[in-house]
Amino acid sequence: WFHISGITPAISLSASELSLEAVKKAREKGIAISCDLNFRKKLWKYGKSAPEVMTGLVKYIDIAIGNEEDCQKSLGVKVDVDVESGKLQVNKYKELTDKILKLYPNIKKIAITLRESHSANYNGWSAVL
Image (spheres, helix red, strand yellow):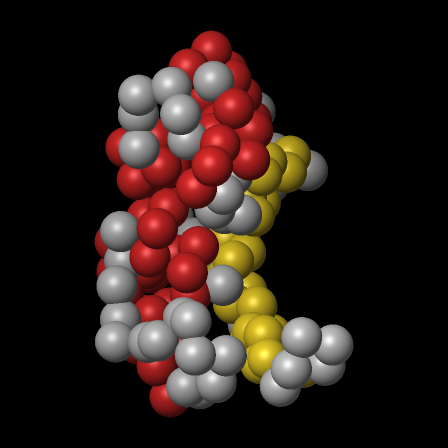
C-alpha cells in the first residue's frame, strides 16, 4: 500500500515531481494507492497551483480522502457548497463524489470528511464513503 498526502507535492517543485514519480511507480507495481488531498494554501508557493499538480497525481490513485474544500481547491471540482459556513449540506456530497468519479474513473473509493462547526470549542466530525 502506498499513501501520499497533498502536503508532500505542495512543499516544492522537486517534491511534486517525486510524488508523481512515486505514484506512477506504485501503479506500475500494482500497489494500491491512497491520497489525502489535504489542501494547504500557504504551502503552494513555488509557482505551480494545487490543481496543476494534484490532478496529475490523482489519475493514479485508488482511494481519495478529503473534504469538500480539498476537492474544490486541489482538483478544481466544484459544487455549490459553502465551505466557510460550518453547516453540513449532505445532499451536495453525492454530487461532489459523482463529479470526481466521472473525471477520475480510476478512483475506487472516496472518503469525504465532514466537519460541522458549532463553536470554536465544539465540532462534529463524520465522513461519507
